[in-house]
Amino acid sequence: MRRRSLRRPGCLAAIAAVLVLWQAGTVSAQGLPESLAGKYTGTATSSGGDLAVICELKIVGGKPTGTIDSSEGPIAVTGGTLTGDKLVLNLDMGGMIGTISGTLTDGKMTGQWTMGDMSGTCTLTKVTADAAKPAAGTAQERPKPEQTIVHPRLEVAVPDFPAQGLVLDIGGGGEGVIGQLKGKQVVAVDLSKDELLEAPGEPLLEIVMDARDLKFLDRTFDTATVFFTFMYIAPADHAKVFQEIHRVLRPGGRLLIWDVVFPRKTDPRQLHVMYPLHIQLPGKEINTGYGAKIAEGQGAEHFLELAGATGFEVIARKNENGWFHLELRKAG
Image: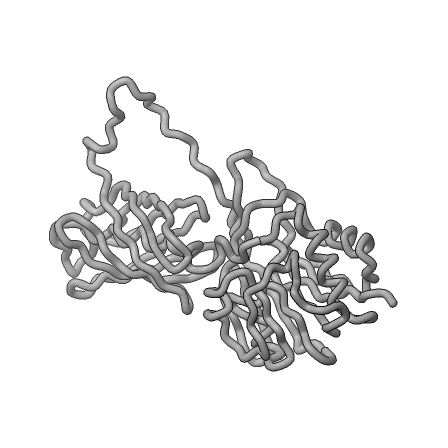
């Protein structure tokens, strides 16, 4: 149930693909030369790992446009500027805005990308006419790539909800939203040590732990939260996680869940979905993106069934475009 398998820097590494714009040859102050147009392939790297990317680039009136494709979703090139030997490009991934810059040495592109507090590097190369030709005896048709659905941006407001005692935050790494909100009340657990180290906020404790096997005693916590984390846990493991949370909550304790509503596929090649997010906390905004493998049609009803089977009562339910929020209470 590794959290944010697509969400963290690896999910945005594809933006670095457009750095290949800086190919050999001169560029003038009037704009980028049309010779930069074409197809580029390579690898983008960040703390989240490596990602293969393909960029189809066009130069229109000296300005760059085009699309970057990867298994993690399409990114639009919306413009850019060239000052001396510095190229800055503007990018848009379903409402998530970013920029990139880079240089070229001996035909090999090396550059940097940044988006919010995330960043990474990449190396890419333009596909030449000879390289694009299929080898003798091979099929002419290109294999059909996997597809990623890019959902409209989710608008998620998280108020400073009342909570007595300690708050167990499942999947509390990454942005650490609950840790930022409730501070020293929070015990954050996550499978990833790196995610916990990256999380802002000041929770009381940060522990590497599997939510399917919580190491706490029965009836330890008054509140548990799961903020956009079930989307990264295999559906077959959801019941076990519910059982563990139920066990460590005191009678009358609350479970608060925020999670996505997965779409229905319109093409069997659609394997992943990307959700740009705008999270509104009291006095603070967070812009990020969550991506995951599609669990087709999974939404609030799935978790309401698990709640009933585990012994939770439904206190409140909120349905929004692409996400939901549940407040549950342990009976007794």
